[in-house]
Structures are given as C-alpha cells and as structure tokens.
Image 1: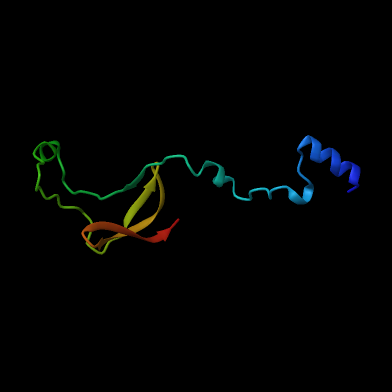
Image 2: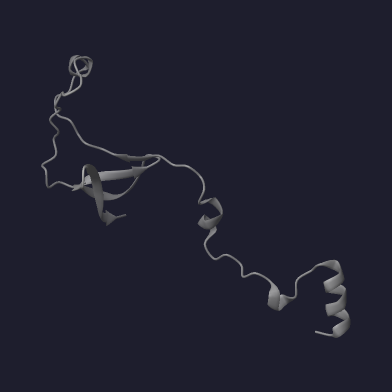
Length: 100
C-alpha cells in the first residue's frame, strides 16, 4: 500500500487491512446474551387436579422415571439433550449425558 493511501486512511480513521479485526465465524456469538428457558421434564403417573390442589410443603410426587433414567433437557421447548440427576454438595444438579 502506498504511503499516500496510508496517510489518507490515517486521517480518515479507516483501519489498514492488516489492522482490521477478523470476521466472526460463529453467528451465535452476536446473540449469546439473549435469555432462554431451560427445562427438565419428569413424567408423573396418574397425577390429577386433585393431586395438584393437595400439594403442600413436604409432599412427595412419584414420577414415572426410574432413578437411573435419563431426563429430557429442553431449551425454549426444543429438545437439546438428555441428563441425569446428581447431588453436588447440598444441591441437586444434572449432568448432560447426550446432546442432540
């Protein structure tokens, strides 16, 4: 590039081609701040409105899952993988076992 072109670009504030930032290859980087809803689904057998109305602190609800079964993981209602429950300290967590 000639010195005259470099001088004009310096005056106008335009970056040199060598100084330009690389183009982002992942378009999701531009929207990584958007919020989303993450849900885990546990099927509950024979659950009725009466059961729902009688729920209170300390109630136990039986699920249709075996304790070793994987649980579906959804983001904004879209299935993205499967998880299993795990206890971490005094918290209940999930470990991703399969990504779709």
